[in-house]
Image 1: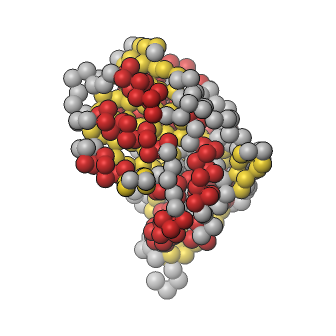
Image 2: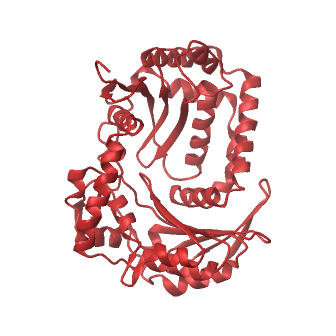
Image 3: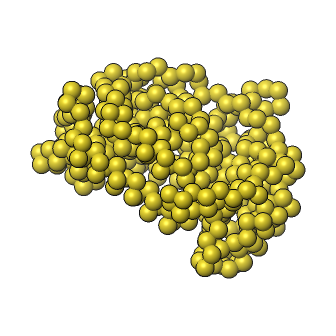
Length: 425
């Protein structure tokens, strides 16, 4: 086990790679009562087509999310109940690119860690339980389909991307999950829930060597092969369409405005681009920016306005959204402001304030064990060390933000999705 210090943020990470390929990262926190463990696989909602046992497999939308629900089933009962009985607070989530299982506890950490590693690595499905889960997840999907915020998000994804599966709902549809069988789940578990495709991150007053010992004892010895995935080919540099409109039960139009960015390969450059994109968002759309003040003053946005940048394998985007009486006016104002910045640049004092504020927020986020463990895992899958973000921040200059906005926030890369009130409402 190797320990690496990150003096700029006051953290030390113990790292080990087991013979089966699993990477383990432990941030030892002496004196803290609470401990947190996060066990994740590089497998999410967009991983629907992959190569396994000599053949390409197309799986229905929603399998990763469905599998997350069923992984808590064990031959002896339910892992959630076991963890809760041990005083732990367990849960899981599925994103477009990752599925993670975790618990937080103040006692019996090692016992709970054994349970976590066991149920995630040893699948147990029956067709009867799969059929029952289809009804439960079907209800969840109906709720999602009635959620305007969810619908406007996927309308934007469909507008921005030509074929990338980021545009497919993580939960799938009622029709797609009806094709999921126990065999489907076993095949996807075999493909993606292998030690070399997973990572374990831990934070708390724990012994890193003991964590490694437990993982070595419980997890499979076979690392599993490299998973080849198909995301539908390379995306173009322009939005697939100008946008999409829906009608739902809303009182005020809800919008998502997006700009298609160029994807980044795994590695340190991806971390730099993520930070650069986030800083560009702040300079253009943040509540300290001239544009935000203008839009708010004109009543075109309210306090529900939000924004961000996302980088996934094969795609990336910058997006902003919320409620607005005139989403088209917001789009034009954003494009105009980006064009102005391209001509005149970002105010230097604003840039310096934003950079310091964003850096401070990142450092403050390290106080959350949950945030720390998830970021360490995401960084691992993306090929960079999350705690190296101070050096990445230092490399970003004002001109980089200006160049990013000039390249990304353009009419050709833009799409606008809107959910409007039903006619006559």
